[in-house]
Length: 214
Figure (cartoon, one colour):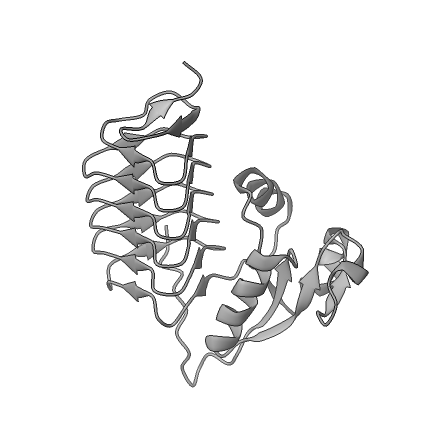
């Protein structure tokens, strides 16, 4: 997996970026793109453009082909399954958005189409897949693996050597202790504390986190 972090140099002019999804998450990403020195051309969204006053709506998702020759794209949608569906449907240049206040060690590997929000911390040896979200002030300690389309919500704290499976969503303020594996397609509820491996897909709440399916 290549390191997809983008840094502006004289040899790399600003990119033109189209954001898929004009809701709140997409608008946060738009700010990150601008802070990185790149240019937001506008948004693609299937909702009625009148729902997004003062925002440049370029068209619907099906219009992505019109812009693929001139722009890179990022999915500004928090839903993991929908983000996966979009990214695996369209063959375009996927943009990686990293807020300038994020603290990321030099050996971290970040997949394409990932978004890392303000004040996030990602420590040494960690690997993030494609389409991952590390949201505002979330911390990812050393040697973590976040597989494709994982979402670590605002204020999440992951201890060292945590492995999170495909499409899992870690809710706001949840804590995962070190050396824990969480399987794919899980939801860990807001404020939950994960103290052991979660090997069954499902919804987990509480301290310690327990599966609501059981």
